Length: 316
Image (cartoon, rainbow, N blue to C red):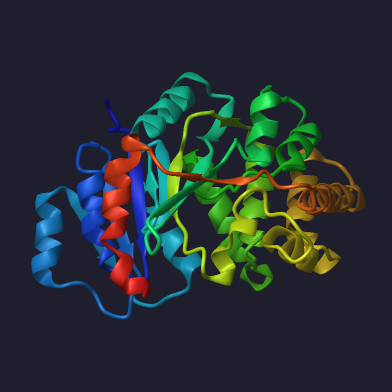
């Protein structure tokens, strides 16, 4: 499998113990691999030398805002494709290659990704859903949408998190620059939903059925609870509450203005469209969640599980 036109960027902040896990897991991938470390202190020169010997670049930027780090990282990408990889999650290598092949062969797609599973190393438990509803919607409604406005509505009807897909760097960089230039509006949903809208303006997203990533979850922590990992369901959950916060004209003005400039529609109509799609996403977050399943036997994920178990002491 050839990954030479892909850059994997790993963002690390105060979890430098994950670096060895990342380099081991992705050692067979011949993509450009770069670690951007915004911890208070860098790793040792010896560790940096070890990374270099394994063809992994290391950039320490200090404790600067995360969006600043991301823009520094994406501005330095020379390949056509890029992935934003959290340091505590592990992506399925075969699925990355499938997504890369889809983007290479289909210029109408700007990004590609698939569904998730979750692993809690403190209880050694793997969790999943029978295809979470937001992914199932996109799999069941897999179609190319040419009209920009309809594409935004299609993309946001059941929103799949934007950041951790495989992207064309040109658009991913532009989307993250937009966020940085409008930093006063930031919130967790702003950094997911607004780039999702921007991406839909630029082209279609492909969702594949193949498992995409195993995400690190600590289910005893409120922010990682099981009621939040299958669709984000309920009025107090992440997407509902955060989306409610950004549904005002001042926050939505930048993205409304951008949509107006691209399509030529009136700014008030543009604002109404953006507000409508976010209201839809908020409403769909109130739907009935799929049951969470404890996955007891999953030998194909054993390597990932073993690597995640090595980090358990940090979370005790």
